[in-house]
Each structure stands twice: as structure tokens, then as C-alpha cells.
Amino acid sequence: AFDKNEAVVYAVNFKGIQDITSSYKAMVSAEHLLQQRDTVDVGNPIYTERLGPGWYKIEHGSRWMGKSASVKLSGPKTPAEQLWVKGFCPEPVVAKGPITLSFWADGTRLGSATLKRPDTFELRFRLPAALVGKDTIVVTSEVSRTLRPPNDPRDLGLPFGIFSIH
Image (cartoon, rainbow, N blue to C red; front, side):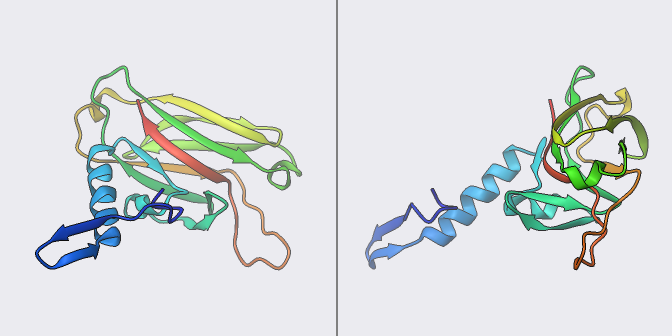
């Protein structure tokens, strides 16, 4: 509701009635981020501080990465938890053939996937036991090639939505 400007918060005190929507929204966002350190929705601006290099601005609820990009997440709580990633492979990305998408966590290779056709994708990767209990890990993704659309100076890899550990 806050993101759509459909909610307003008022404080009633000795000063009267005050609109505190912006400060309340900031507080709720900060609390959410503290509690949800195992997920980054790259298409949501409240997660911007958890993005490393390689991301472009938000477009239609997602973000394009360049050749590579990274996010900061909390480490897994148990050895059974995995990295889960959701994104989209547009037709122009695979027009010249399949593309390989690879992932690392704190420099350790997790694995890769080959994307052959335009579609949403959800990928899961096991995480090394050495990451269990770490306060923060850096997950890096990299594509085997980028594309440069006409009249666009950016080298685009893939658009992503969510990175999560569960």
C-alpha cells in the first residue's frame, strides 16, 4: 500500500494530528530488511544497499545485470539450505544460441545453467558447508555473453528478480 501511495499514517499527540507516513514507511522498510536478510528482490528499491556492482536501474519490476553482478545475503543457517534465483531470459538474449549463467558464493563456484529459450527461470544451487552461519555472503552471477540493443549503450546480461537462501 505504501509503494502505491494507498496508505497514510498519522500521529495524534499534543501537537495535534501529523502525517508521519514517510518516516513510518522508512522504519517499516528498515525493519523488513533487518528481518529478511536471506532474500534480495533486485527489482525492489528497498534492497538497493544489498546490491553489489554490475546492476542497472529497475525496469518493470526487475533489473538487468551486465556481464556479471552480485548481491549480499546472509549465509545459510543449515547445510540443507540452497541458493534460489528467479529471473527471465528474453528472446534477444538467446537469439544467437544458448547462454550459460554461472554462480559463485564468496568466490566458490556453485554451478551453472544453460538457457536455451526465452522464458522465466528458477534455479537452485547447493551452498558450501563453510558458508553456514556466516553473517554475510556475496553471491555473484555471470553470463557467457551479453547483448547490446540498438540505441542502448548498455551491455546486457539477463534481467533478475529474486535471490534467496532457503
